[in-house]
Structures are given as structure tokens and as C-alpha cells.
Length: 347
Image 1 (spheres, helix red, strand yellow):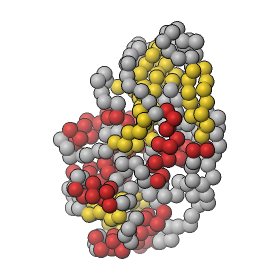
Image 2 (tube, helix red, strand yellow; image 1 turned 180 degrees about the vertical axis):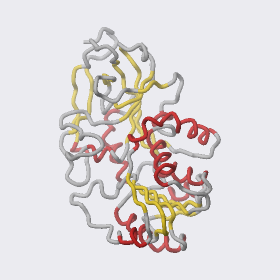
Image 3 (cartoon, one colour; image 1 turned 45 degrees about the vertical axis):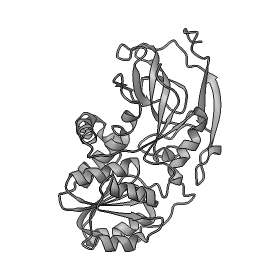
Image 4 (cartoon, helix red, strand yellow; image 1 turned 90 degrees about the vertical axis):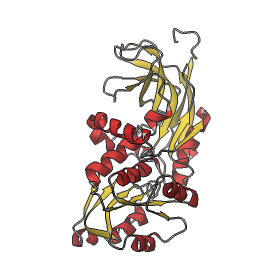
């Protein structure tokens, strides 16, 4: 039991109950009440009350039992997720009680962080709005930054096409490409998202994949071909972009949300020979490869966001009971920008 009588004895958690076969659903998770994590912390550990959770499409891949850049979530354990919390007990002078910490807190109300062998948490400056470290300055924006600038390497005047362009990663990619002096085309779903990309983010062109023929529109808008294609979607949209790819272009593979919930792997792309004839480099990447360079990227992102050169949208749901449903919003396209969920306010 915790030493502080004001703290609850119960820690509510959402567990991975089964591995999805096809589309993920709420039945793949189970709610459990567990005893609050032991207060006898080892040296360096902290007990954190979760305040805000982040949701990423990549979390769907962590649910599958197959090798990846991160181990799969263990069945019967809380679903892995990044979050921000407030330190309520501490055996670490770098994280005093009352301070904020960001890390993998998972789908639970309390977590022990900074355990040996785990990714360490990061301190969050006092007074920081909880959405910023997970949103505009968080993993999605860092993914956009390194994926575009290090893998895509756009040059001024080139045509950059971004799929999933209204999402947390895609929207930042598109706007950084504009900052680099590129002509930028975004692919998104629905009139509202396309209007936001055009009118607020200033993209040169948008394609509504829900109501337009993507292949035909790419041929119309990019008659000289695509120099950089940043792909968050995969599937048919990736194939359409490969068909319109320019000589010596770059394809950045960041995600494939269109295929994450497929019960069976779909064939394709069928036109990979275009990569040979047009001498194209197609490369996948994950943000964890650039963790050691976060301090380099964040000041530039902060400068662009503060100056209004990057606009970010945050979709903040609320309530512990709504955690699984909030995750599913990513796969229906219901989210408007970065998907977050608020559990509590700082004390």
C-alpha cells in the first residue's frame, strides 16, 4: 500500500487480451484492477500518475507476435503507449515528487518508470502544456523531421507528395517540405481534412482519396513526376505513387496504416520495376534510430511552430474508460490530427 493515504490502493489498467486477427477491436483489450505498484522503489525508479496518453498507428504492429524494432506487447500486460505523468513517489533526484515525466507509461493510471533495462523517461519542464511534448514537439513531429530531412532529403523546387497528410506525422512532413522550398501535394481522406491542408497548412495541392482517383490525380498534378514520396499509408496509394515516380527520386516508408489490420498480407505493389527503370531509392526507417539526435531537432521544430510555419492539430479525448475506443479512432480516420487522451490534471 502507498504511504500517502490520499493515493488509491487500486491501479486500473487496460490489458492486451488477445492478438487481433484483422481489424483491431475493443474486444482485444480487457480492463483490470490491480494493486497500486509497490512503493518500495529501487534506486532511480519513480512512481508516476498518468495524466495524458499518446496514440500512434504503429501501436497496432506492437500487438502482433512477430519480430519488429520493438518487442510485441505481452498478452495479459498493459498495452504499451507513451504518456506524460506526474511523479508521486521518487527514488530519483532528477524526478522529484510533483515533477512531470514523459515515457512509456502504458494504458494504466499508475506506472513505475526508469526500471533497469527499460527506456528511461524524460523530464518535462514545469508549466508545459501536456499536449505539446506528445504532439507538436513529440514523437510524431520528430518522425516527420528525421524521415523527411534525413531519408527523403528534399531539395528546393522538387515535388514532394505525402500520404496520410492530415495525420500527426504527415502534416508536419508536408509543412517542413514547404519550409524547404518544395512544391507539396498531400493525400488525405475527406473534404474537411483536405481543406485544412490547403487553407491552413498552405499545401500546393490536395487529393481526397475517399472521393477521387488517386492515380489519375497524381498524373494530373505531378506531370513531371514525384521527387520525394513520404508514405504513411502503403497499399494502393503506394502503388499509385510508384507509377508516377520521377527519375532518381526517393520514397520514404514511414508506415502502412492501410494494411495494419489486414487478416492476410495483400499482394503488391505490382509495379516495383519502376524503381529499377527510374533508379529510385526506397527506404524504410523508424524514429528510434534517431533518438540520440532529438536535441538537434527540437529547437528547429520549436522555432517553426512558434513562428506559425508549422500548424499542428490535437484531438484530445478524455476518460480512462475511453482508452481503447480512442485508439480505434486512428483506423477509422475519425481523429483530427494528433490523437491524445487525458486521464487527469496535474495536482
